[in-house]
Amino acid sequence: MTRAWILPMLLLVCGSLVATALAVRGFSGAAVPLLLMFVLLAGLNSPLAFPRPISAVEAQRRSPVDGRPIVYWRAGCKYCLRLRIRLGGSAHQLHWVDIWRDPAGATAVRAANDGDETVPTIVVAGQPHVNPDPEWVRAQLSPST
Image (cartoon, rainbow, N blue to C red; front, side, top):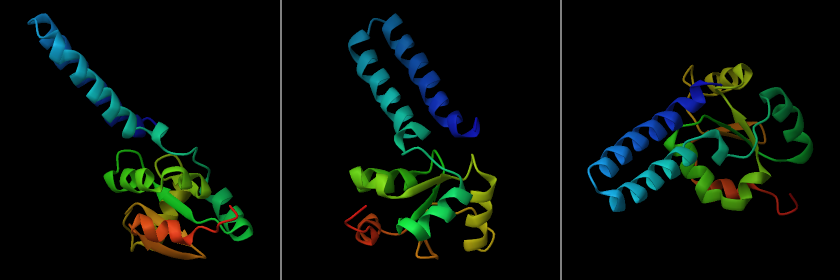
């Protein structure tokens, strides 16, 4: 779990250091927007930007029942972030499995990707799809969920 927070914390620390250095030199007008930019980047790259993850076992149990696709992802992945942002509010219609928190999720991704942990991997009706277009993923969602 701590691995998912390394990049966001690093962004916060670096942003704080750079903003402090600018403020000390008298450039507080530039320090504030820069710090806000680093905070935003940290938030987008943190697990907080994604719906609450569930375990792979629970997602695999629920998906056939409710028809929702499973998204295997990890924090810091720019493709996962792109998918999450482009899905917008529809993101809550999927089961999200963080492979850094769930070893069973990482195992499922490796099984679908010839041993690689390539994310996002979306499982729709039992078929894995690696880094699909977000519009395609949205089209896979049933209107009733």
